[in-house]
Length: 121
Image 1 (tube, one colour):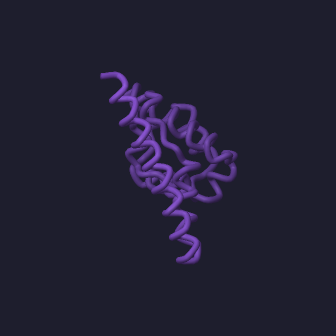
Image 2 (spheres, rainbow, N blue to C red):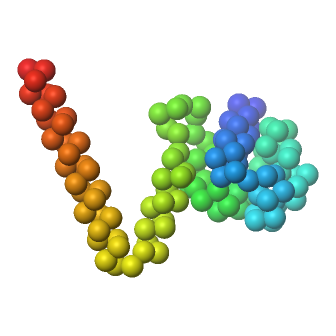
């Protein structure tokens, strides 16, 4: 249990840093009292599921994100997720133009990967 509390604390700190939020801002947005939040982030107490749900809303992540191991391969790309959400706010013609650019970039990458595979054979 101590390892889980420490893991949750580490992930909460990491997510708060990624979002560029102060503890005070997280508390204001989540409704979690600042003293309680500080103890959670410092690994002194185990947060309840309802508290984790509130924090997940603030950090815009799934609650499972708090339990992920310290693995750089599993790092959440929150800036990318935020950009994806902003795409929904674009006009339909702007969305289509953006999707065409993305498709073009992906097709270019696939072509390069295929050429490298052929060259390596």
